[in-house]
Structure formats: C-alpha cells, structure tokens
Length: 127
Image (tube, rainbow, N blue to C red; front, side, top):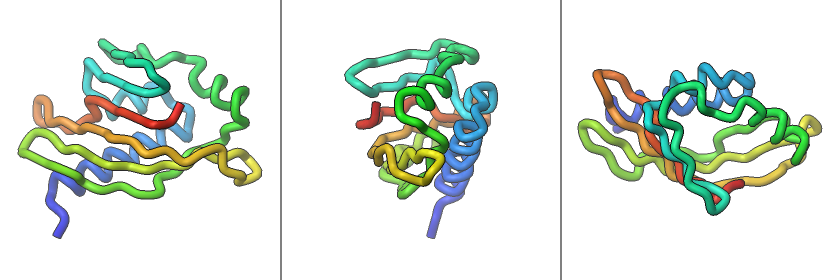
C-alpha cells in the first residue's frame, strides 16, 4: 500500500516534470523548497530563493543536446518519515524525433515545510 506521503510526492514529481517540459521555471520553483540543493555534473549548486534557476536552462539543453522533453522511467520511495521522503528516480531526456539523449538515475529529497511538500534537493548522475 502506498502511503499518503508517497502519493503526494509522486504528484509533486509529476508537477515538476510538467513544469520542466513546459519550460516553466516559475512552476518548477513552485515545486521546490528553498534553499534547494542540486548536485550534478560534479557541481553543487544551491538555489537560495525562487527565481534562481538559470533562465537560459531550457535553451542550453536544446542547443547542446537537441532536448525536447523528459519523462520519468521509474520512481520509488526509498525512505520516508513524517517530514521527509527520499525518492529514487530514473528519467530519460528525448529529442523531438523521440531519440534518446540519455537516461539518468537520481535521488530527489522532498520535505514537508509549513504544511506543504516540496523538493528540497536533487542529486543526479546526469549532466
């Protein structure tokens, strides 16, 4: 049986992916808690507040890889408490012609802050 926390976090991941694919940095921020930590490509980046996602993020993905959209391949709750959930996720990035750019495993951390769930951190093996 899936816990209420797990169901809420899966919905949160769905909203985050929809915002990403819509190129909507504001809605991506709405899915996060701040400070938000991202560990990827041998870098640690801390977004202290909403609006700190690089605004050229989507353009850089498109120019570098021909990125069109991303999709979840697998998502599972690894650990959970009343106020934190560790999620093991795998996602694939696709080009417009449906060819695969890459598939990446990640750890997402969702936290309950002031009664709302949000992504507090992500650690990815992707770029």
